[in-house]
Amino acid sequence: MRGHEPRSSSSCAACKLLKRRCTPTCIFAPYFRSSDPITFAKVHKVFGASNVSKLLSEVPDEQRQETVNSLAYEAEVRLKDPVYGCIGAIASLQKKMLELQHDLAVARTRLLAHSGANNHVPPLDDSPELAAFLDLVPYSDLMLLDGSSLDAYLYDLGQPPFV
Amino acid sequence: MNPKRCAACKYLRRRCPKDCIFAPYFPPNDPEKFAYIHRIYGAGNVSKMLQQLPVQTRAEAVESLCFEAKCRVEDPVYGCVGIISLLQTEIQKTEILLAKTQAEIVVAQIKHSQNQNSEFM
Image (cartoon, rainbow over all chains, first blue to last red; front, side, top):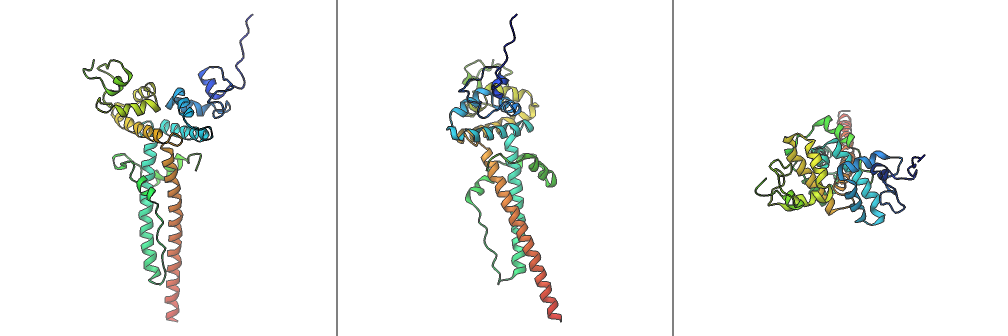
């Protein structure tokens, strides 16, 4: 009787999902462990396994984990918001940042008024890169959340798994 | 068949049917747009994604996919997630600075009212 050949217990999550043999040189294996099948499933759904394989082969070894982390994050956000994906997130973050900058400007003006001429309020250290990123997405066209709904959305967004 | 193929069908070297899902969003005069999207997501994936969306949201979805695809081509490691990370870091810094400034306002207000009280005594 022909027995059912067991799949290799060391198959990575990608090869398990793709139902193929996981070789020692599998490009996915170091980053998609079999203990976490969901991450690869999400990445595959958005980007496709062959595109991920191509992307990984185009970056140096030492940057592949970060690449996988960012792809997983992007896939997660896209699946939660299939229309806007990360663009919605960027637009919401831009909006939050501009609101905070406004609040900070108001607070600094009040502090100056209270402190008087004797006390020096140090100037802000705004990075020029930040200014460019606050204008990336024309969020006025998007139906963005406000107030506590915006805060809840940004909390739920989570931080990318790197700094 | 569309007399003029959309950018997607041109790229994929196939005929462009009248109900082509890509045609409304990938005009033939902008081949780069589809090239970015195909490189990162693949035509099949994008077609599936668009089919699952209401028609009125598909144009926005294509624009956002295109933006993300461009970011990923320019930065293969972080894509647009690098921008999210930067904005979150800046938001945290600004929230801390705002809280600090508001605390300093309270301190200044207390000092001011203490000064006023001591003038009356």
